Length: 86
Image (cartoon, rainbow, N blue to C red; front, side, top):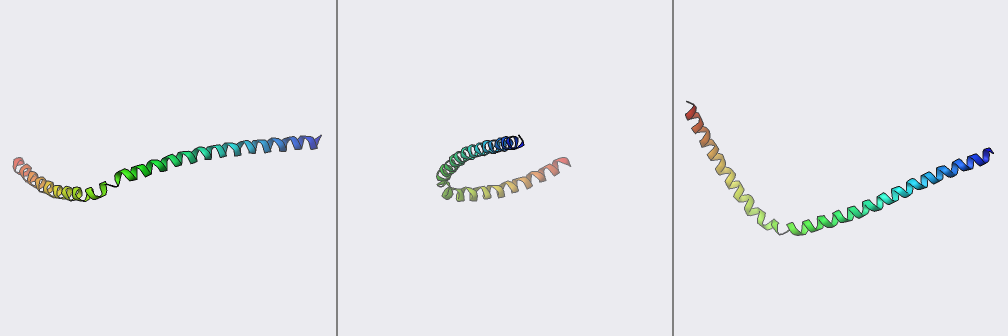
């Protein structure tokens, strides 16, 4: 009787572990598909932004000049604000 009960408990534990392992394997398969889709999307984005590399340098240079000019305007406006406050 005790041997039979022990074998039944062992069988239930093995079945439970097998069920969890199958669920984990299915989750990993879904994760693999999602990661593959993500990698494909990132490769597409990389291909689309590659032409921007040559154009960003002049844009950044122009923005640096604009920043310097806006700094001068800011200092002038601060001077005007001091004068208007008295």
